[in-house]
Length: 340
Ligand code: NCD
Image (tube, rainbow, N blue to C red; front, side, top):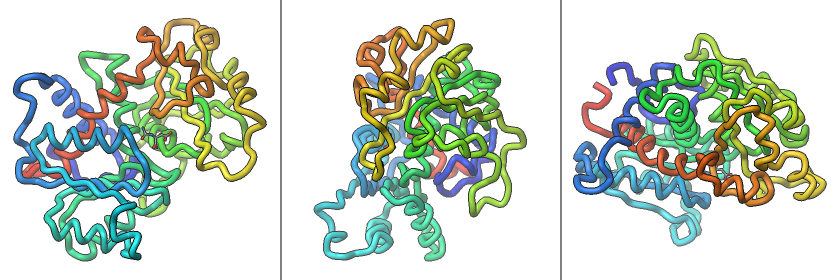
């Protein structure tokens, strides 16, 4: 853990290969912990994790809360509808209120890109030592999901040693609404860092050509790319072109709530062209796993029979892996002495 240098986890663009290796190694250790019996590790005893979710969530929030409890942290959560936000309190003042109550980690989700980053900067400037963990900001970033997807894939390719190297040279197809997906963006940083060959597939309205250059320059605020050489990103328009030779396929939810223009003719037409079915998956030429971050629109981006097929679907495995990944992140940010 000696080279871990992040005070916050905001965006995987800032992760080096060593950072991915550290998180995966810790997650593998936490995953091996017996679930029954001695369930809790004392690592975060006396520490407080507060979840500030300004946008709905099923998996991410519960997963962070369970992860914190398994490390013996105290857990507090905030719901915007019943809070003073409705009386006009700013997000920063809300966050500072929880910091004053002793929060050591704030897990933040917001529908606007940049909110967790802004909070981290303002709290740093105010001299607070609290860590901010981004649980999804707008379309921009969802680092814990990118890491749990990486962990799930690495475990699939090398169950004994799920390191970043397990992804090197693998053809990973990501299909669907890339434009509105913070999950896809975080996966692009993670997968290319590990040397995977990423193939993005979707209609031009949901997948602009420019995505092939997504990792070519570090995002604003990051002086240089911490990864020396990244795997390539290819943009293709049909599954018939994307799937042959694939090693894994990740489907994305059509984010209807974020679509403010008519980007699709119909959901039926979308399913015909881009919906993943057993028949389509056979184009890969060998058995390959299917991932989806959830929640799934059954029968739209993914056939229900494929989602429920335990021989192919890694969707529940992703949910399971989310807990040790979030334990690893909380441990790295909040355990006393973990970053020493
Ligand atoms: C994703 C999200 O909220 O970004 N879900 C999740 O965290 N598992 C993806 C989505 O909403 O489609």
